Structure formats: C-alpha cells, structure tokens
Image 1 (cartoon, rainbow, N blue to C red):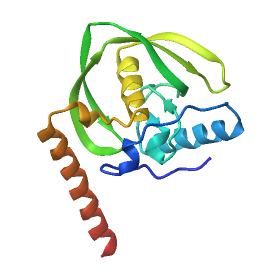
Image 2 (cartoon, rainbow, N blue to C red):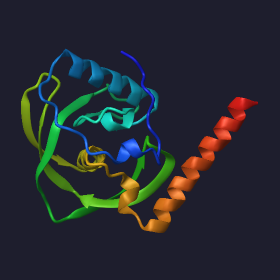
Image 3 (cartoon, helix red, strand yellow):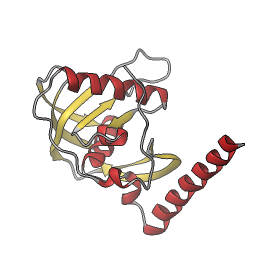
Length: 175
C-alpha cells in the first residue's frame, strides 16, 4: 500500500468524468487499498479515485468515529437508483478543497447499487451522513466538486483560499 498525492482545486483533472471499471481484479483492489491509506492519512472520510489522478469510478469511505473500529467501505461503479424529496443540509468539506467547509443540501436518503471490494453487487439504502458522503463522492466521479453546488462567489472564494494556502506553503518550504 502507498499514500498517493491528492489533487487540489483548481486542478483540471478533478473536472474529468471517470470511466467505469471493466472488471474487479488485483489491480483494482490495490488501487482501493492505496486510496484508503491515502484517505486515512489526510485524514478524511471519503475519497474518489479521480482525486488521486485515476479517472475510474471507484470510491472508498470510512464513516467510523474516532473511538470506533475502522469500517472501510468500497464502491466500484456506484450509481444512485432512487432518492427521496426530503433534503438534508450538511456542512461538507473535501480533501481536494482543503480547510474549506460549507453547507450543501442533498437528498437525505438514496438507494445505491455498486460492486464491493470482491466485485459482488450490492444494492442498499443510504441515509444521513452515509447518504451525504456517497453523493459527495459520486459527484467527483462526474467531475463535480461540492463547491460547484455553491454560489459563484463562494466557489471563487474557496478556490482563492486554497490557492493562497498553497502559495504560503510553497514559500515556507522554500525557506
């Protein structure tokens, strides 16, 4: 397993639409293992393959709390089959938009279908944080960031904040 670099806005790769995975094999599982290690190191609760520069429809998540046993989840070629009209406002953040948080409204329940780590098909309902996180990560697979759900002003502010932090970090590293 290896920790990979996470792409940061405004990297144009993040706007790419990811391709479906043809088959789940050892290479797919190795990528998911790397993604999980990268996500834990960041730290975060979800990561899409495109965020590490791989345009494949793969997501890893772990919604376990600090004092809970890790509970990694793997989603290959996920799709939303159904959602409910009721929405849930949730403060979201993103490893590709570091240190920026904003409230986004999403359906509070979604029915999803995906392949798991072993390539088995799973269909289930996700609700609460699980629903929010899977929708957030699935947006990545379609080239959409959570800041794309915000007003243009808030989106530009987020990108400027991330770029400023990156410049400051580069200056510190150069000293």
